[in-house]
Amino acid sequence: MESSAPRPAPTGSATASATTAAPLAVSARGLVKSFGQVHAVDGVDLTVRQGEIVAFLGPNGAGKTTTIDMLLGLTHPDRGTVEVFGESARGAITHGLVSAVLQTGGLLKDITVRETLQLTASLFVDTRPIDEVLQRAGITSIADRRVGVCSGGQQQRLRFAMALLSDPGLLILDEPTTGMDVEGRRAFWGAIRADAARGRTVLFATHYLDEADEYADRIVLMSRGRIVADGTTAEIKNLVSGRIVQATLPGADPVALAAMPNVENVETKGDRISLHTRDSDAVARYLLTETAAHDVEITAQNLESVFLALTANDNSTEGARR
View 1 (cartoon, rainbow, N blue to C red):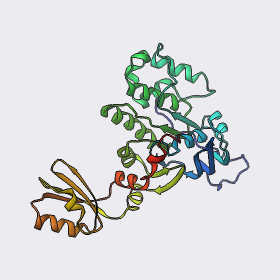
View 2 (cartoon, one colour):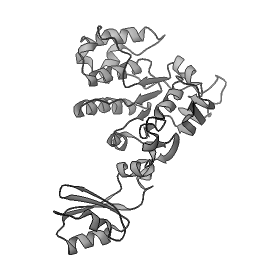
View 3 (cartoon, helix red, strand yellow):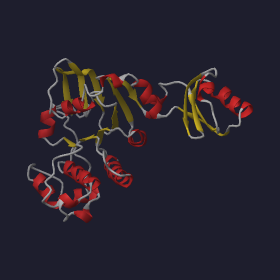
View 4 (cartoon, helix red, strand yellow):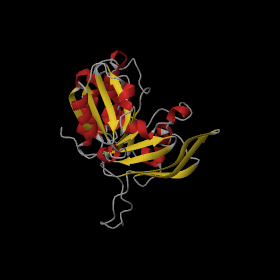
């Protein structure tokens, strides 16, 4: 059976003009949330357009999970507003416009994958067919397997199938591939990407920067309860100037290399060195003419180096925020 595109978001009353723009998938303004003396979220503004795939990044304690909880209506902000497709977060969930795939929980181990989906479908007035969501999540072959004997990756794809039942316009993924092996992560993201290609809006939080780099249209980076960067992957990488010069140099002296002009940081791994610099040509020239370095490469800043630069002081608040 050919599956339909995700249900369109509400556009207002029946008398609304045909030219009225569709509402934002997410519109959060001035979100503030504290737990005692800890400011978990401190003035977050976030908008997500319909059809975007947005990666929500930040170190542990940056406030990502608390922000997601507010988008899902699980936590009320102390100040600020949240709208999902023009409705309150709770209203959007009630109408099946938003679903979430969380890290753990929500599964009964003694029933089958198909029975789990049937049970979940009974909670909604209208759902996509069970066989369709099984196929889209890539778990048709394990439909009659008990959940308790499914691997961690298979259980996450079951949660994905459960989220698809209401055919939501917005899918929120909170660390969806934690604990998966490489093959499981690849299969899971293959299913997500195929579904997102049909027009669904996806907002996902992850610690795997390669996932954000490969799958996101846009990256939002949180640090200490605030958004510190928001843009495409290329735009985020350009926030930190300079390039990385890598080379193979047996017996390298990191202290001497760090003393070179325009070298900001030196990393070594065996015989391989990485130098962060504002003048990559000069550094490469020095390595090739004054040392025994070979296999020299010059690359732009990667997402990891930008992430570390923009969240450098977050370790001091580790665990204070969610």
